[in-house]
Length: 177
Length: 400
Image (cartoon, rainbow over all chains, first blue to last red):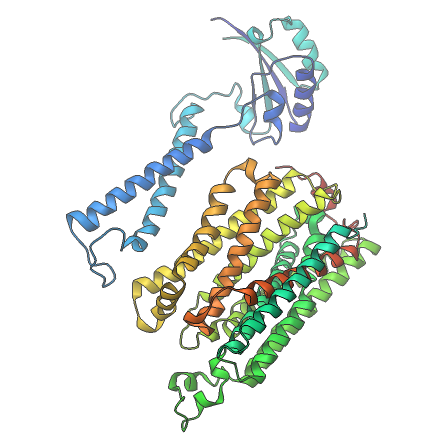
């Protein structure tokens, strides 16, 4: 679907934040903000939902916990019973203390890697993927706010541009995607 | 804003102290003819003196940590931390009374190494291992060390408190930088004393046994208790309408400390336990064998509660901002850490004959009443917001 996008560039994150507050109070829908660093408090202003990455981390952790337990039981008890610490009891439960550090490490490993990879996929930023930000300067010292005309049908593009200019933008750009 | 103790709180502390003392007296009369009467009484004095003294000490450590790291967020709750640290003078008196009584009763089977018979080769109680340690574990050197620890803690507490009150009057950053240096200096002393003091006061009860992790383990428990008490006290003051500048973010941060220090404690419990279990050396394993045989349910129950409750209930962001959950978890793990100290001491002194009855509960409740009263009284002595703290503005705008 053809859509028009307005990119408004700022050179200060506080100016952007104040501008975003003003625009939202007038009923403008801001689609996205690009910034070289996290801007504290911007998420609730532009209406971004809380991340669900934590839930995924828990699930990845559970997978790691299960894999570690099943794996170690097979390697150390079933397939090749090991004498652990001079206590050849050959059961998982009695030797569990020795397995806890590895279980813990593997849980953390799976949770951390799973979380990082999920994050990269969801943001479409896996290595080699085309960049999502509209302007390379947003990785340096500029901040860009993205407005879609299809989400702001009650305003014309010139109205939006006028409102944006009042918030202290340094550059405005209208693009078709 | 000045703090005034509510009548209800005055009433509560009075009821706790009077009820505790009454229970203690009933317990003492009930058990007056037991052969281990004195050991039981003095074990409990040591347990409770140490437990409540260590909450004050944990607060002093936490305060020094904030100074040394030039932290900003805590400025609005600084006076609450100081009020907890203000239990130190009373705690020192309690510790000295408990340790002096033990010294004059030759250890009363709590500190067996204090008994002159065990180092006397002619006696049938002679113990070669204790005799070998007597260069370090003897009454004179024990008291020299104890007095050095207590004097250091007292001097640093007095200094921090005096400078904090002076800062309210004069402002500026000179006091801030002085606190920064003194805070770092305290941490240097504390890093050694936190270990060696509990070797002397607690670990020497199981005189044949030793563990290099014991100091950190006890310290982690102390820190966790302090953070838990701190969050509950801040929530109480908020509920009463004090501390208007403390917002959800501050509560969340102290909640995180409770969560994190619970993990630190569990981690050290497990490290000490697993290494000894793995190596399986007789003189090390005896500590756990005895506790598992005599306190199995209580010992592992205490570990489970102190680990699982904060982990499961305080994991989410919302939980760390909810007063009800924090108070619920807090009350449980403070009891859990008291049981931890109880087993540390009783396991060595009373062994299988230990039980929790009127003496134990009565004394703990009476000490709790005293503790609350002293802390609340400390809060009345200074404005609840340190007006000239250099980071006060940062703390007021704290948002996470």
